[in-house]
Image (cartoon, rainbow, N blue to C red):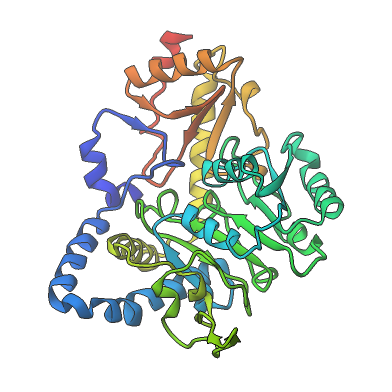
Length: 392
């Protein structure tokens, strides 16, 4: 199938440019434009009654679709928010922070976690235990050992590390290694959802899974979600009025007063008023995938083939820096949907990224790591690295 047909709007707006940053901001399919207009039309039609309409139609459909993609068997445990940081902080607010508590994580987490956790550690609210992701071959065993040693209140790690593309090979094994039932486990799935086939059936009862649509779900910013563990009774302090939707916990007496009530399903982690335009876009994209028989497996197979085509063309350029010897993850079976090249230092990386940009090759960099992401709108003909031959 010629997948480029679904992206004509963004492709036409970026003619003569090669976009390799879909691990950060994927081009939106054309169907998302109609979705935004549909949101306006429904808002005009339902006005103040639109919230009920959204939660009766839009939200349940998305819950069902996401649950099927992740094989959770529990669509009612999917809750939405404008960003994963909001969901993360809501989860962390379940812990009694009057005394510092332990968090075990890695040195390769995105800023939504890393910045927040660092600030909380700075404030003396948490004790952050950071496990290096390298060497990747021993990461899982080392991470399990750190969890066992520290017995933390929270375990947080990514399914795919954003700064390298390394895919954790045993997410379920890590989750199931946590023996303390009171430990909260959070998996950041933002670089895995709709990119790598993901089956949460074995851990749906135990772990939170965070993701959203800005990257591989292709619907842009503002549509993030969490799978909340089945039969979760946590009561986040950071809470909003959406958390009262649906069936509520039974009232409890606390000092003669009823305690704050929560929804009995994943909505207990909901926030407050948000713009649902992004959820309309996400619904349109997921419908498009279904209508055209585009599964996560199909996407993964296609994108990994594009990575191989890119690397083959790159080899012909004989570039001293951009070559397979500098790949952060050389084994394709452990790699997400982007290639990360580790260079000597941040200045060299920045200079190369700017030179590529001047030649209309758009990518991004973090420190000394230059990243090239791939998507359905790439083809072998789209990949033109002739400019690199001149730069070699």
